[in-house]
Amino acid sequence: MPKKQRPPQDAPKSNIFAIGAMGRGLEQSAVAFLPGVRVELLSNRQAIIDGCRGIIEYSDTLIRLSSEKLILKFTGANLEIKLLSQQNMIIEGTILSLEYE
Image (cartoon, rainbow, N blue to C red):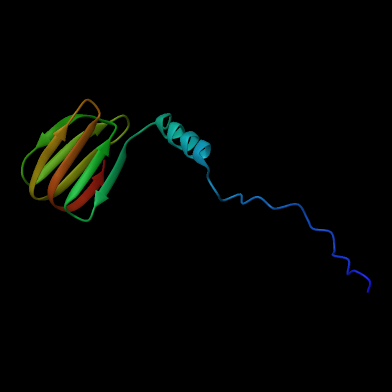
C-alpha cells in the first residue's frame, strides 16, 4: 500500500504580540526615559503618582502637585498624602476629580 505524502509544513509563525522576559525588561526600561508624570488611579480612593516634583497646595479637599511640565490638581474629601518620597506619592481619600493645569 503506498504511503500518503504530507504537504510540506510552513515554518512556525512567531507571535508578534507575545512579549518574553527580555521584551518586558525593555518595555519597563523605556518607561524610565519618558518625561513627565505617571498617575495611576485605584477607583476613586487612591492615586499613585510617579514623577512628582513637589507639593504646591495641601488640604483635606484639595491637593496641587508640581511635575516636570504639569500641575496636578486633586479635589475630593478626606484627602491625605500617605506616602511621600523624592518622586513618588500616594494620595488616599475620596477623589472627586483630577485636573491638569
